[in-house]
Length: 320
Image (cartoon, rainbow, N blue to C red):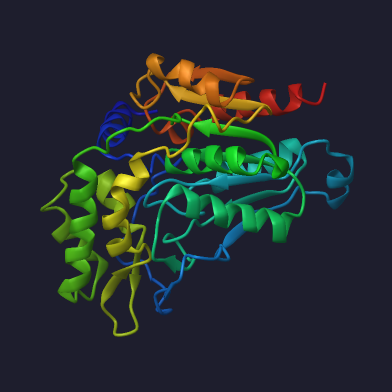
């Protein structure tokens, strides 16, 4: 990996919490044609919402009949989407011969917006997806905010979780970095400006963040509204009010435990899973395995081969 890219990725991991999201950070082209489909409407969060997703199947339909690996559900982080992990999803589908689903969590991507954004609601939606679409216990894999959502599903509904994989997050309360509210507010300001090109939005965003990779990532959420102005797929107003909920972990290890297989992968150059959190992980997930990868918070995009190796070894060992 080029030194400049490594440096910028290290900076990203220290600036963003929750797209902690297993990104590949694609280069954003300002002239790219964006969808003019209307932004998603906000719906009540009292009931689970139907999540949008991408499905990755093994190359041969016969592979599914012979596979002993449960379907895998992949969850992104804050300001991420189902698009972030397509390459590793394809690898898992091919090499593990199972179906992989990458979801857009509520208030992100193409999924509907909900008035609340906390781990109870996030977990409820994923549980509904497994109950109605997959209809069998599944492997739940998430990064950052998606990792805490995966943990929440495992603790709430162990009957639908074959195993749980959390990437660079822990079952603890952790304050968000100060840049997170700044980024959310920057996107809100851009949306109110009535800009008509992504290039202009990129320039305005430069007033808040000089790092090009971070600006590129934030603008992967850009979308033209019906009036031709720049908007965003993510529910910015809702997320702005929910930042405290995203930082917390609202479970108690005295009452909530998942006794199934659990894998925690952490980047050794990231601070999101400190050594002090390991006993807490054990109280919630007594059968956990911890794997360290020499990476920052963006473990999947920085070290995809090592990440895939650790996940596949964990899942295949379960079948022996």
